[in-house]
Length: 129
Image 1 (cartoon, rainbow, N blue to C red):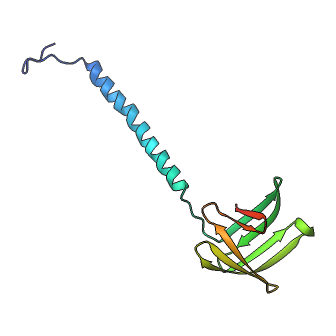
Image 2 (spheres, rainbow, N blue to C red):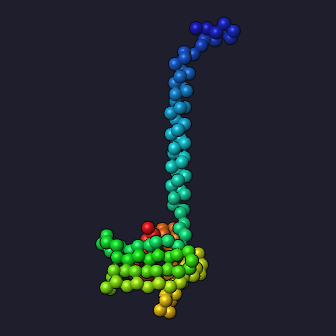
Image 3 (cartoon, rainbow, N blue to C red):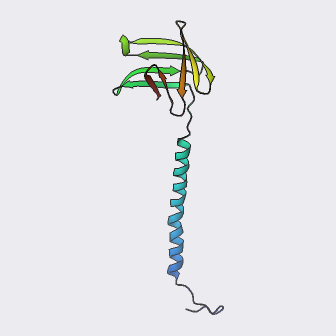
């Protein structure tokens, strides 16, 4: 067909539909890809707050729990060594370090890995729930 005003041939309607359908399909794929990439970048930058529940596992079995509370206190229990329970106060000294002051008067400095939500006491790693 020839357009009477311009003298040009009309493109078949199928080309218009293909162009529209292509954008309908491609646009969501592009948006989903951007969202997934942004989520992966943000997920790798997660920094946990210090207060929370942390567990330790030995060969897949939960052997201990360490709870750090927002009010500056903590409690610790373990099944190892016949079962031990301690509590006390904690204080943040810098971005990745806290000092634990146990109720028996002893103190211990703990380095935190806030990006992974974990810390170590001796050779035991506690991971945030």
